[in-house]
Length: 307
Length: 316
Image (cartoon, rainbow over all chains, first blue to last red; front, side, top):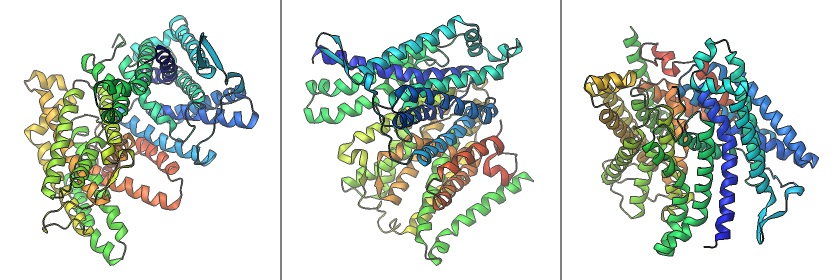
């Protein structure tokens, strides 16, 4: 196995992990503060991917696509929060699962009505379509590198927002004890709407970056959603730091598993058997990781304090 | 009397379901027989989930796994020319019970949201295992050449017979389930749902009770899977897709959880709604989705609650 290939796949893992983090950050905040299971979080990811690909196609400007996708997801997020989720905060998790399951059906079908049943083609913008030489002789796609850098920047901003601002203090306080925050006179409703919209925007951002790498199709949000849930459960629900560590872990384990598990297995077993078990085991790897983490730490790696 | 209303609802429902095959045959619409067999199979799956969800508070978001294991048991045995019906169902039950034992033993260490997610994760593992089984069709699935063979006693290739077998299984599981939740065992499970710590402190090993309930539920769902394989004569990983687990859960909640009969009604309501809406428009999910949201927001007791009154239907 060449070390350069390992490096490249490792970077791919980091890039995938960062996209997962943008999804998981919103999910874990909504989960930690509002105690709400939002299965429809993947829909914002899908909306981000669709709107940006569509506007990019129509206008020829990738940045215009971003400028359209984020507000679109924000608007949908606020509308859904005010229209549906406000009534769900006090309900059981089960009700939330059912209602958001209904929302998934709705959004997936709406997307098919608006943009048709076939997948939308999202291209990489020209200014990011080349390769960057990281080390001499190690080319890496500029678009993926951009995802890593922009994603890290967003993660840093999010960290500053949550750790250093008054708003972030309220968010953290809400994650520890939301009843107390309300009792101290904070407008919890408004805080909830803000956090929810923030999560929707982050998911849309993740989706619009994913568009050119994966296919832009109806239901694209759900596969990522499940992974994002795995991430927040491993990281500890409500913990942004946990989500960051866990998304990189999941991204790298998943990508490396898919790339190297089969050749690794082939060294110890018959090639035909390795061809069979390699991909299967690679798909299962992160779920095995999650089950193992929960077995030893039922609250995840970074359980939030104060509950 | 709420009890009278409840019994009446169950009796009317059972009689109506028993009358389906003659009606479908008389109308010359064998398609409806298939549709309703499918509905009853999912009614069994929903009932099995309700046993742990409604009474034990265990929100398993992975019940499609046992459906898939039951179906694959029939498919794989048939693949090797083993068509004996008793063997099919015995393996389906044992395999799904064993899977539930392993999954339950690990998942029940956690609770709340973590439990929901870990059961989902296990089902994803089994789903991908199914995708990787290239011998058995992998992602595309495989056709099953013959029905489970009960040596001429039960001709499952006759659609009416398959319907009545499914119906009998549903009734059996319903009455067995009622006995179970009313028994001492059931009381422990229900006690653990409302306050596990208290149950433990008065001396019950709640973990074992919950695990036993989890295994029983998984085995029941495995039977539903074996029946489903007999209905469709086809098995593929899509049967274990996580949206399937979601659908079964939707049926339970739509029907009214913690009632055993409600989830069966929920299966009827959900699949009929799906059938009717998909006949009206290609984009039926755009209608079904908001209906689900409205049910959650406004009809908290589910379909069963509408008919049977509030007594036994869901409690907050």
